[in-house]
Length: 580
Image (cartoon, rainbow, N blue to C red; front, side, top):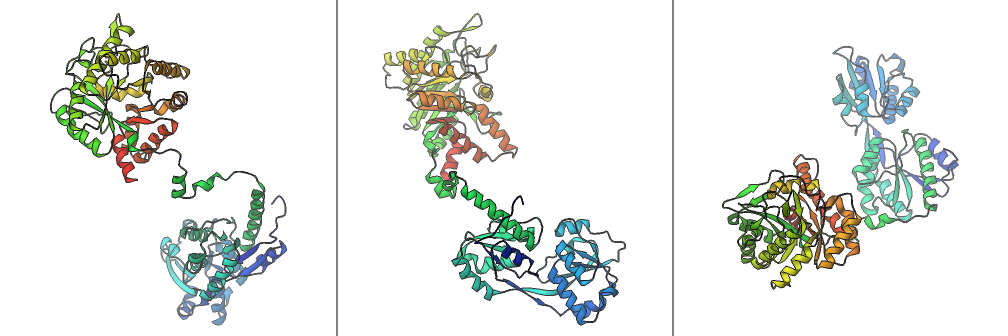
């Protein structure tokens, strides 16, 4: 220790009787007070004495695992007039204090493991010189069979003492603990722990005391009963433990003098954590994307998105029924037409696949909120989101097509229009078109902040919408930009957007928070296909707990500022939330 520590004002309770006064004198020297309450008593067992005394010389090894065993063995030798120096056996001790006790008796210790552990004892014990080599394990009544079963040699067991609980002493200790909170209680054996756990802890619990353990086996016994191990020395002796207690007390004193906030007070139980929880995820927050394919008898699994399918109308009903049964309030529809052309005319045809799907869903479930994705990429033969001329996407000519698509979707019964192609002015054009067509009441959920992202890969498999040439970086945003997102969102707000979508979500939570802080509109986070696929792949490989990861991820989007979340996890999340 860097400086002398003391135990002034501290009571040390011994649950066993130290063999010497050394530890008690050290407590007194440091200003502390000792109280001894032996919770176990040892009694000599004599039933096997005649047999093993007669055979002692036939054993190659005598094995001792405790000082008590050594003391009882010595008494038996004296009683039967056996001279120690006449025994040809080699002696093994499991620990240093046992070895010291053996040496005091007059034996020479031939083997002791480097670590006080039965497993290490077995690993390091000398190999048998012959198959007939015999060992005698001299032990107490509670000793485990680890050594007997682990050694390759033949091992006999001689129980020389028994350990019994001292219930009378335990009854005396109980009121003492009740009256002297914050006592430091020393446990030197698992047996003492068992007595305390059975006779005292049910009344006082473990929080009234500071536990000090000698040995890892004793510490493990405390932990088994739910008790914290506050103090444990590296050397398995009372004296080492007293010095460790003094060090611990000094550190505790220093900690009490520190000034800091105790934030952990609000995390002590599930109930308290729930009371102060800032963010909650609800099924009402979820929007479930569905891919609707033109044709019949289609339920095509999407390989890169396990659990997600393309549905024809004749299979759509069961999917929508399940969504409603789970309490999910909203879906967003993406269409996959049979025919595509340069302008994506099926997007705004009155009988286009999304329009037909809208009618089908609204007739089956009138209260289900149906959002129509308003874009052209699924419908164009080139896979881009607008009119192409000389290899470029034209902005203004595309706006008219988007407006016509939104009107067709509104006529079919869409509750919300969600334009996603990131043309400049697309909200203004759609708002004007809807108003003129008599749909001023239909809100626009704008993909206001949509980045050009590699996270969209699986979606393009699902919607058959990958560009046939080039990419979408001339109209979708650079993922390195943050300020640009505020400009894009501000334009959509000015043009009449009612919701603002940030897409993707997981790698753009900073953008979600920025948009939330700057605009007083509902914010939607799109938990996109690549984010979904990564979780599914990891879960299928057993690398993560899917339920915990999904709920944590979706909650993080709420915490970042999202009011609603579009996610392919919606059905699973709804089930898990219901279970919770």
